[in-house]
Length: 70
Image (cartoon, rainbow, N blue to C red):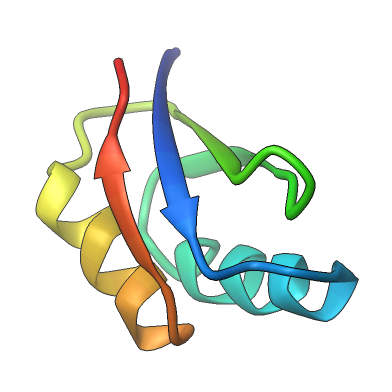
């Protein structure tokens, strides 16, 4: 299992969190998603390799922007 953390810009509520969770959840091998509008943090846990570009594209598809933190 691998966990990557991202900083998401623009989330303000639970609906924002749901939108991000839904889009990121469509990526193959994602096993867990933790997202907080309050902190802007997104933690994605995967069972295999996931390209950062896939996660960033999913966040963008949800209507937000993100950068990888670690």
